[in-house]
Each structure stands twice: as structure tokens, then as C-alpha cells.
Image (cartoon, rainbow, N blue to C red; front, side, top):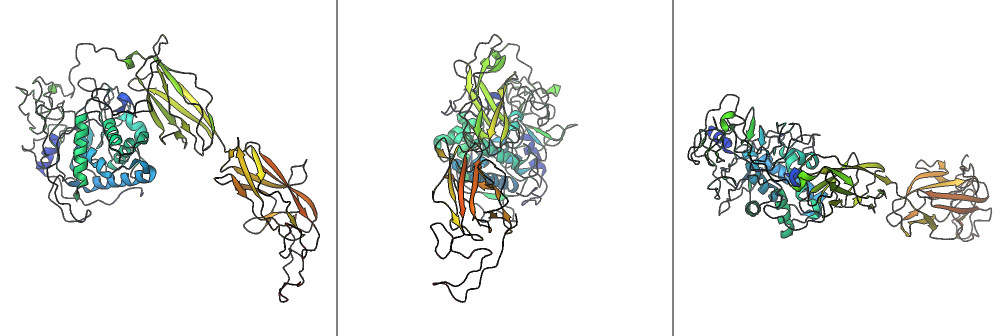
Length: 639
């Protein structure tokens, strides 16, 4: 993929005042809030569809509830057309659509069994951010201003203390969902991808976010062509049955046909799941009220210094965060339904607090009951054995961590995340480097099996308690090179050759490890001086390198998938006698093969003797040999 998508895909004119007002109305859902319950909602021990209230991945955060029209707009025949189409629900901004299709194509290659349709990414993007606020992205796919979800301070949503020092969400106290696919920072830390090849994983970039969402939906070995797995994947993104039905509605709608529209001209949704009188009809491409003039320090989108808040709760949404009077009257901006807490819509209880400019609801005076996660003091090792495996193999031992109170009591039903760190191609069994597991009744979480990659050396696996920061063990695992413990020949005949000739048959061997074929094992072949002297011989048989130069040691040999290896052709110089070829592998397998170079007449060859003209030997015509044949060139290798 090119380092940057420099071209501007089918871009329309500047956003109109009407569009600006509509953008001010946008409020977002919370997408994969896996700092609440981890990366993998269904884990190795949690395979059923998630249910409402069962530790929702989004912290029960809001999302757009607009449903698609009953009829599908006719798609344009050319999705890259240059003639603008009128905004419609079937139209997807060009750069956003390109990002979805590129992400799905990459997942088809990386995880073909997932069967991820790009239309699913489009459906989630529609519900999460209105296709990046109608496609307000630059040429590289980065949103022109940040899209921020609700402040996750425990008031109506999950309570997730800051994990990124405000790098992505600008909040150093609590986390907030970020970007067109609404990842929270702690999830982005492990799920983020570089989708546009610029070397940066940015949740505000639609190429990066779409690719990350694709991998997120394709974890756990899910096959999205299976309706049950499709439901599981969507519910893991936002654990709400209404969310599931909304996404599925858009998925089917987009499958019936879409077309490209200019960036920045997409229709904007209006209904939100946390609004009173939730809007469940088709979204309108135009707002019902004119735009409000921006307040000092805010842009026309209602954002603070270029950020578009989507929590529906703070003064950054409306002009001055009016309190909503009867709980239903719109505020000054008059465009975004909200909670009546100063977002300019007053659709809640009419007690908003937006006048303080914080965008947050005062904390509840009551102390919430302690959760199992609150009881965890630390994570401890739970008798994990030695973690060693050969490259390409599955580790026999699994990592086991225990969530414990300060007194050492195990804590059940909390989520422990296992993270493989560093530059390694070792993964868990499903190909991912992150796995989240629910602790059992004794407080133990067992990670999926590790699968060793081809890079040998030490790797580190960290343990993290999802939802709180507590001490946890780090595990060291070792990947060793592929090995064999036995080498045998497939043909026991002694190779024989005449001086200056070539051995007729190439030597073939088979390597095994614990009785099984040892595939892709490195083999070294050396013509040694004697059985007791492994030094390289300076005379007798030899191999040839690519330039035809005699060599008596080869180190770049490797068995095939069946553990077999056929050695390159061997030649003889003018020295006669018995010589030794020694083959060795990692793991200690050794095989010594005797080679005979005799002065017998090649016209009467013994079995295994080459009948081709010897190197450095004149060949006279014999019966069956053309009288016009010229003698072979004389060549004897130097030691």
C-alpha cells in the first residue's frame, strides 16, 4: 500500500452552512470500549452471544439509531464517478468507502476464514459516527477535527480512568472514544492498525480505524458468513440488541447497492440511543434548524478547538449549554438530541450543568457497590510451567494468571488481558497478539495456547486486569530453532564415482523429531577429514556453488514440509579412496555417509557409479558412444 493516499478521492465543494449545523448535531456512540471488559467478549470460555447488561463493551454508551429508508437509492454505475450524486442514504463519502473496501480486501488475504464484508464496516461506521460525519476527512483519510465520545466517568456510562495521558482523547482524567470507528485509547493501544501505510496508527484516520475494526471483528476465529458469529462480533463492538439490529439493518441496506458521493457531503444522522423519543426512522440529509454562530474558542461544529464532542452532555455541544427547561426544548444550537445536561438540546431531565463548560455531569453522591474488578489487588502467576517451543510449534504449556485480593483470595468473573509484546511473529492460537479471558471460580484465567513463529529468541507476555491498573506478572517464553533428533538416508546404497567424475545419484535424507517429520529444519553438510576429525577435508568429493566453484561445506540446506532433503550433486577430484560426508541438524541429529572414489573403468560401472565423462579424464569412444564425441574438458579442483 502506498505510504500515503495523496490523491483526493472525489471531493466536493466546501461544507455549506447547513452542513455545518448538521455537524454540530452529531453525537456519537461508544464503539469497542474494551477497557471495560477486554478485547475478546466471547473468549475461549465465553462463546455465546453477549446479552444486554452483561458487561457491555461500550459501557452502554449511545449510538445512532437512525434506520435506513424502506427503499434503496439506485447506486451509480461507476463508484468512482466524477459527477456528484444528490446526498442519499445509499451514498458513502469516497474516501470513507475506499477505506472500508481496502480494509476488507486486506482481511480477505490475512484472515480468509473471517469472510468480512466491507458493508459491515460501513454499517458500523454509519452507526458510530455517521460515516466520519458525512466524510469530513482530508486527503489521507484523517478527520478534519476530532470525533470524541462521552466522558467515561461512570455517570451513565462506564467508568474508565485515563489510559493514554490524553494523547488521543485530550482527557487526562478519563478515557473517551475517539475517531470515526470510536475506539477508546486503551483498546486502540492493542487493536490499532496502520491502514494507509504512513507508519502511524491513528484512530482519527479512517484507513487506520477501518482496518483496526476489521481485525477486531475477525478475532476469536469468527466466520462472519455464519449468522451466529456475525451477531457475536457485532455485540462485541457494542453489547446491545438494539445496536445489533440497527447495524444489521444498515448491513443489508448497503448490500443492496451503494454509490460514491463527495467527501463532506454525506447525510447526517439525528437519532441517538440515549435520547428521549429516540428517532428510529431514516436520517435526514439536512438539519431542521439553521446553524448557530460559534461561541468563543469553539468552531462551528460545537467542538472545542477543533474537537467534535459526541457525548451529548457538555457545553461544547450547544452555544451555552442551556438547561432544557421542560426537558424537551432544544437549546441554542437546536440540532442535537441529548440528555438535557448542557448539550444544546435539553432532552433529559432539564437539570443540565453545561454552564460550567466542563461537559461532565456532577458525580452521583451515592457510592456505587463494589464490583469484582474493584476487589482485585493484584494478578499472580497460577503455576505456569516452562514456556518453550520450537519455531512453528504450539507451546505445550499455557499461561495461567490468578486475580487475587490483597489477602490472596481468588476473584472470579473479572477479565484478564494477555498481551504479547515486542517484535515477534509469535501469536496466540487465533493469530492475534492479544487475548482476554474471564477468570473462573478460583480466580484463574488461562490464556489461549501460544503458537511460536519463525523468529527465535525470548518473547514477553504481559498480564493486565481489564478496568483497573494493578500489578501483574510478566512471562518469558522462548522460541527455539526447528530441530531434528534423527537423520536417515532414503537409499542405503554406497555412492560411488570415478576420479574427476560426478556421482550418479544425489543423496536424499529424511529428518524426524520425536518420530514425526521434522519440517524446515536447517541442515549442514560437510566433507570431513575422518570419523574422529570433523574438520573440512581439503581433497576428495566436493559440491559446487552457484559459480561452479568447489566447496566442501554447505550450510543453507533445509528439509521440506515432509522432513526430506535431497542434497546437491557431488563431484570427485582425482583422489581415490573412501571419504565421509557428515550431515548435522539443530537438535543433535547426525548422519555420516561413506563415499567411494575408485579407479575402475567407467565403461563397466558398478552400481551407483557415474557413467558420464569424468572431469579431467579423456574419454575414448566405446561401443554405444558416438565416435564424434569430443573429450570432456580437464578440470581438477584445487584444495
